[in-house]
Length: 517
Figure 1: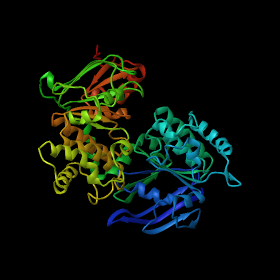
Figure 2: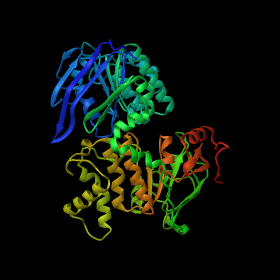
Figure 3: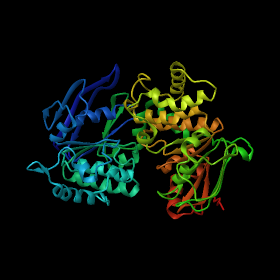
Figure 4: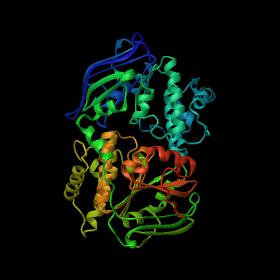
């Protein structure tokens, strides 16, 4: 941890910002010292992103003072901030998919000689950065063809290439696995030792406690707490983030499991010896009213099952009987028409049209739901249904005509999930539904999942956070190398038990094991 005498890199003093009458920040003070990791915590909508955008030059404050390297400054663009030693890695990717990795890293500040871009020089500078991040890719391949995790590492490489004194990281490892995250933390520690100041935002609070020297907590646009050293703890951060909501989150862990109604087999999802390029004879049955988790390492087969059920890919063998004795859909449209809903892992590229308004993003499913009643809905009817859904989701927004991109990550995700409620699906597929949202928004999403189960829907759930399974699922199927190797029920699906299981391919002897033949 840097000493209190370490050089102050920036200071926000009494910063406020409003959008159309909605207060995003109110009287916020924030500082960053050289060689420090200062974590910014808060629920979605608490003001973290606005605060970071002001520091990075993407937004201007409504009032207050911003000092950089000891001098008052008014940054009007991200490029101006870059010139002044400030770089940001935004939560959502800002890469050009048709460009390769090197082009993306240097976009806008390419080295030139006699007006000609020096490609070789760019490659020489990116090579050690890529090695530092453990990024092993074809540097001439368009990045749109790379894994999301690799794209996120390239986003981080862009910032590192600027040699910034202030580095802002907004959910930098939301798409990274455990090993990739550890590598990123080693890079952060190296930068800290070199004197770089890092403003870090993450919803993974265990990582915040591990890596941060100091934490500031925002709630409803105001800074409500700041502490460091031995005062750092997950429970303290959660309590400060949520205020009165903290007890509701704690109560969730104690809740009873969902109890599926006794039902005919024809109402169940029946999967028998399902095989594909990844899957090897997977079999299971899921009943209406229960939440079934899929847990496994990347490539173990969890996502493959969801894609097959949603008509994205075809299996090579096996039988699937959908709820209501329906056939396995051959494409996505057939899946939607058969009552299948899919919440994708990447809401911004697959779940939302970001520049479209909130109403437009809810239109597709709402139109289908009303259309099944035998009439074409008017705009007024669609708005009424959308408002009803927004209320049910506790969606925080200005107007239905506001662009989806104006919402916080948690509210964006609630739209992606909640719009399917109007579509009345029989089967709901949830692929990492709480990715990139804070603990308060997570609890609201968990409540939405509970509502789906109580409404007698079949819910299949997978998450990159193993701790979520015990909070959400009635039972969890263990995937390993394309096969279902076992099952954990209810509160047996602890993070510790799952971590062992997904890496060993079997459930530890101290847990009841129900193998799927």
